[in-house]
Image (tube, rainbow, N blue to C red; front, side, top):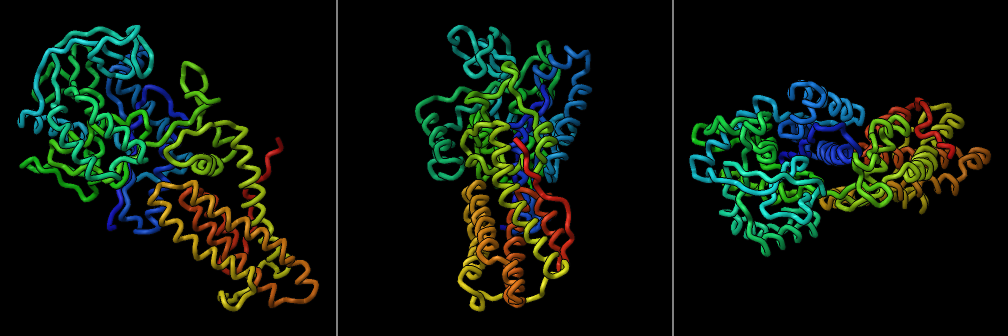
Length: 496
């Protein structure tokens, strides 16, 4: 692999970022950091950004007596502030209001219109403003099936993209590419939908008399582009361009992983590959739909007043503790239950008792018995006792496990394996009793013991670097190359 391109969805800026946004970006950040270790910084591109057009934005801005662009400027700062606080190492942040994006959207619309994949037609049906989605059939109680809020009846002329024309192609593509959508059950969900349902063509415009905040269609000055058609194109507008013949060029495309929440699977697994195919562009290698974080078994929502602020949680427990909890608590793809009780439990048991205690004890042992100097020895597996040998074997097996698990998107399992080494090493200290070795003047044995400890902890820090970068750096700084540099306790225990 000579490059790795990962994307998050563009976050809609009608409200402040919440724990769901943080989760997606933390997962993407862990992927990007991991791949930088493998293929180098210059070969990894991590894209995130904001989705800024549409009726919801226009309405919220109006309620605040602001112009839409002024409102979005304010909201974008909140997202960027959060990513900085959460140590998100993105390479590019794209906004759908940027010129580079607008120009690509206009080019795409022009290409598809000239090849007769876009047409004008009368639309009559039901429209959900919060979801910005049309429903062609009357819904029970006239509410949106997704958000359960009232629908508005609309009749107007709009432009449509011929989604239905490419349904058979997409189904055939899925049949040949079983890893295109992950987890596997999401792949089956999309495949079954396409086999059982006929796709409607996608309405890709809104009349300016109803909505002005959007990208004007190049072939109709009376219409702006539908927000979902506009936003999807950011993945290519950020990393490439079309030549004069309408052919797209990019070093980074196709994306290797497009990370999304399960609620926007339809747009990414159906609309997006069809749009790309119509443009003659290869689809991404993989679309991965992760689950939701729930509160008390229910979905977080503003109406319920149970939205969790990642900034507040990060300030209370530390950013790396939050990152660890989100990545360890559930397997990627599954829903998880979010609670502060669960964070505190993970913090006290995994971070304070296991990891923090291991580093603290090791530094104290070196400080006490060798005046802070790390004994310099070359440790070989065949030259140590059985317990030391098992730790060395575990260290060597850990990186192979990483590589296999990252391919399966299994961060939780990688962290579980790291903690196996942490727990083995804590037991190693208890069993070896360095205080007894020193008392019995077994200095050479003590040197071997310390070197095995140091090697294990450095391996832990190396493996934690994509998931808990600040903690990893702190561990390596405290250990030093030859001399320890004792710092603050990594994770002071929380008194419940």
